[in-house]
Image (tube, rainbow, N blue to C red; front, side):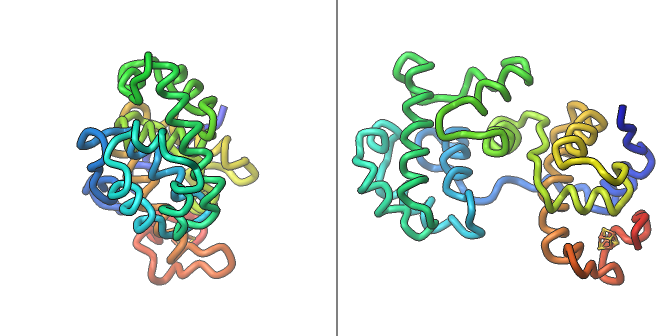
Length: 223
Ligand code: SF4
């Protein structure tokens, strides 16, 4: 069993700040705050750093999920072209929305996953056509407020250097250990994922970590 040092975890969370970072962007397609919008946005964000324009264009072009489902994939791809891999993403979006409709009597909704047992929700969502484990985790965390830590290589590098997990683990192993240590604290899960993702790209770089500029240096084993 992998033990995450509680004192260090508390120190890292404190150094990251107590503000609970909200998901970026508003969610106006469908119902406000609709987690399906998070699902679509996460698919759009695959393999790109900036999918905001494509997401906004999609919302503007298709006011309802049914309108989006009914549109030809070639048209959807045209609308989201700026996000890259547009044909693949248009196909995945259609697969995912149709899968949701089939599972919910024609309604495109993720509402049942808000209260389903977490392991079941994760498994069901990750098995949905066009969705994988990482997309499922992002939707559960940001769309449904469930305490799921999306596996991220950047975050894995950072938590290993910090000494939150022992060296030699896979990203899946380190994230499972952290998730277990964080328990039901969704705000802490979101904080850790969002802040460490940013920090690991800008400061805790793979080849040249900038420890002298890092707010986590006082509690980092590597510094
Ligand atoms: S102190 Fe250095 S190694 Fe540690 S988290 Fe910060 S940048 Fe990474």
